[in-house]
Each structure stands twice: as structure tokens, then as C-alpha cells.
Amino acid sequence: YECDLGTAELNLPDATQIKQRAFLNAGGIKSVTFGNALQTVAQYAFYGCPNLQSAQNIANVEDCAFMNCNSLETTTFNSNCSTIGPSAFQSCVSITYFEIKNDNDVRLGKDAFTNCSNLSEIYIKAKTINLYASAERSVDYTAFDGTTKLQKMTLLATSADGLDLNYNYITYKFIFTRTNYYSALSNCGNLHYIQIQNLKNSFAMSEFSSRS
Image (cartoon, rainbow, N blue to C red; front, side):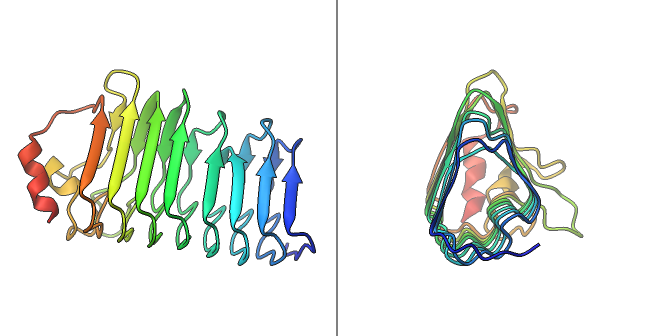
């Protein structure tokens, strides 16, 4: 259902789950703060909230949960977060920084941050990190396609072989290309700093030259 709350600040300290479409297109919300009990923000829960600027202490995020929240600038995540689902933050054009730090296995779904055109830095530190991409030519399965201002990416897996870029048949030299439309970081032409730790497979650093 659609709702338009007459409150600028939404505090949900005891919520364990935000149900599907709970605040779809709610124009009155400027900020939302969750408690540590939160486990899941379900599909389309905050989709298209035009004035939402801040979402704090988020847990697992399902498909399209914050998609098209054009004013969303600030996000923080609690220790329960392990999944950023497909298109979870797609086209959130005001986000500039994304960070997750916990002891979980963290997975980013396809198009999780696609077209977040002002996102400039990503920092993820977790037990394992799975960055989704696909070599299927019929579908553009990427995590960060179109983040044209992305400059810095840090992916630190704390367990051995914990970083899995998971792009199936694409060779390593294509994973960071700007021109290959189905690579994990396609159309990220300003990316100039990458720090990675415990990558599942090895590769030659010279292969990054194809990014330009």
C-alpha cells in the first residue's frame, strides 16, 4: 500500500522487519532510524520516498527496498547486515559514501548500486564478500554499473579466500572495465583506487590496464 506520513523523523527501535511496500512513496519521511533488533527491510519498503535523506542502522536489504530514493544521502548498517539485495539502492543519486563493517558474510546483489551517479567511495570489511556479476549477455547483472563518480573501492575480506567477485565466465581483465557492459564495475571510468584483501583467485595487476 502507499502512505504519506506526516512526520519528518521515523524511529523504529523495536522493529524486527519492515514489510513489503510498508512506506512506498511516503513523501513525509526525511529520516528513519532502526534499532539493533532489525533483521530485514523487505522489498520496496521505502521505494521512491522522495524526501528521505537518512537511513540509520539498516539490516539486510531486500530487492528495491530503497530504490529511487533520490534524496537519500546517509546510510549506516547494523551488525545483522549480510545482504544488499538486487537494486536495493539503485538510482539513489544523492548517496556519496557506502560502508559496511561487520563479521558476517556480505553479499551484494545485481544492480545494488547501479546508477548511484554521485557515489564516490565504497568500503566493505566483512568475513567474506561476494560481489555479484554475470556473463549472461541478455541481462546486465552488475552491482555498480553507472556509478560514474566512483573513485575509491576497498573490499577487505577477513577470512582466507573470502573475496569472491563471482563473475562466472568473464576473465579478470574485464571485471573492472569501463566498456564491457556486463562487468561488475562497468561505466566506472573515474575509479582510480582499489584495495582488496583475500581474493579467492589470483590475477596479474597488469590486467587492470583494460579499465581505461
